[in-house]
Image (cartoon, rainbow, N blue to C red; front, top):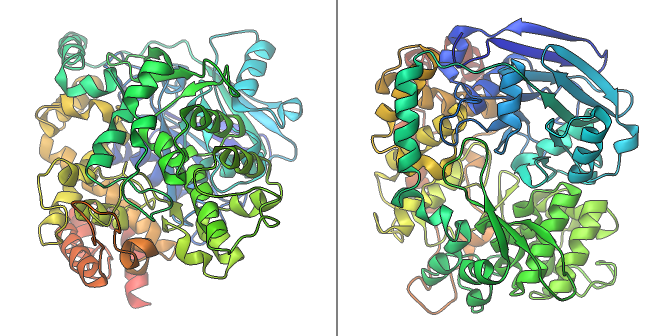
Length: 619
């Protein structure tokens, strides 16, 4: 095969046995790879209602058909898919770097991890040699320390490692899986699933060549896109990076601040991408095969956190900064480093700290409850102290590590209303009260509150629609963006490169065809994107999620924006949400309860999913 390695590795952690199977070509073409293939493999290898921490919950590692090639940004990504301990629906997380390329060179499209090891182990994949090695000595180590230890142990610096930290070991529902020390498959708690299997890390070395089906035409396309990615479509990522969004969103009054108590941060200038780049950025580096280079490595040059080093993006800067009312960049950088050290999703971690601060200011949590921490908004020291407690699951951190939904339920006394999440996944840096296209995208996102499943905020932020108005037509817009984003994460290419696909589907279909040798039309590819989002919905339906879960955080629907400015008083009403949901379900060809119809499943060639949906319709 071309593009695809043609092999799937199965690892039973209970017995220690491994075997290699042939990749089903028809499934590969229908679900492309990455998150699409991962969700299909998870559905086919799991039972309805499985507990996320059960040995029977498979953890799937997948690559895309373009992975391992030299196409700009496509050589490097990988995805983890499983049932999420945060949402109890389908969970998936994508990361970039060099790990994915190495896995493809080892000769695999996917790894299906089942069962649970009796003792801590790590998986060592060396081309065709697959072993489970003792990881007892690695327990308690950070992902960075784990990576270094494994490289030393195996005697090769160029081995690639993806591992969990203490948060994953302790089954924190916000635990992530980190490769290259700062690259996180961050959202939906995949690190906790890995920890539940007593799997500390996956190490891989591969030596195979990845050859495209049509190498000459492929190289022409590589050269063309290499130039595109040095052009205006990616300028933001190559210069200030995503932290540029701080001042952009703040000016629009659409940056949630102090746990959604505000939509504008008065001290945004202190934590802007401009200040970050001027005072803290030491180096900008890129992933394997990337022509953009977006990874902004920052170092704190002086003060209490001198020497702290990590990478920063808008979402993590926002979550650990403005969302907690904090305007000290050195503390925000330290907070990011701690999230990487413990292996926590920094977006969720920051939102949880903001939630705890809100509870503290409302008198729901006392200083004694907080273990002596004065958890007021703006207290940078409190941010660091709470993150430490969460990483170690000590004191209040043990509750907060469950995520805001479960923590709110456990704390009670009205804390549930302060827990800003969708389907159990913490919100990201877009105030949904004044971004109504985004509000729909977030509500229906299959993995919960997340901008990376649809990108619908772009319509609102760029002024392509009236962002304060809920109206028909937004459902189709969200649907189309969802399908494109699903394909991006199934190929896997980087979302930061999406603007370089000038013709979008024709460009992506051409790339797929040149690499794999399978003829793919733009229309067929678009249908594949729809199929990927539909299988995600089918899985969530099987696991008990439905229209009732396609909702918004309490504050978004009950606390109008109080700040003076262009969006004062903005809120999303139930009537507006219902209108948007009806419009979206209709655009998808689903019932108004959010169930894919028999006709739609047959149209997409998903007859094997009929029994799941028909069973729910009868119920």
